[in-house]
Image (cartoon, rainbow, N blue to C red):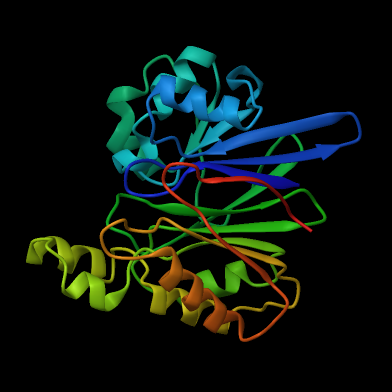
Amino acid sequence: MKFASLGSGSEGNALLITAASGTTSTTVMLDCGFTIRETERRLERLGVQAGSLSGVIVTHEHSDHVGGVFKFARRHRIPVWLSYGTYQAARRDADGVEVSLCRDGEAFSIGDLLLLPYTVPHDAREPLQYVASDGARRLGVLTDAGHVTPYLVETLGGCDALLLECNHDLEMLANSTYPPSLRRRIGGKFGHLSNASSTDILRSLDKSRLKTVIGAHLSKQNNTPQLAQAALEEGIGGMAIALRIACQEEGFGWTDVI
């Protein structure tokens, strides 16, 4: 199993996950917050043809995650999976797209991949994040969550690789030019994970199998790659875990789940 990002941040998000078994291979895209043309351009950069995707999975209805989902899926005749609440919030754009509903704790298969949705605290209708598995390895994905919960820590325990939100530095957010209401929303219990929260998550996780952590969804205004990297380093406490930071423009290239 391997994964790659088309881009990660408030201007658009999309993550590719691929698994192979014998002569078959499955690639899905988690979220699509870019235009059709931009999504196709970024897929080409990663060596992926749009028509080869087996599905698009949606975390929630905010535009940087769902903005391009239905137009892209409709053009390339790709099925979409999302929660009932997310569907209700975004259904006006879903005409002509094959839609399947998923819910917290109920795993579903797409080809060679098994996807486990789990609930996170975020200001959306029914937000989900996912753990992907090929039967041997587990990839955990956690972005767009306002605070740490025992449930998400338990769900992400024992993963081999983790994509983890490091949205903002607390001091930079407090001193930013954002209006007070936006600062409260981002830093609130249903907003986004700070560097400090990501450190706490890593400290709490079962890291016995963890080999790779990638910091994601960084704010351009309220964080830096250096601060996010330092937070991840503090969280792993000197363990032999590879650390990387995703960016908005390039995401990151193909990374094996080992």
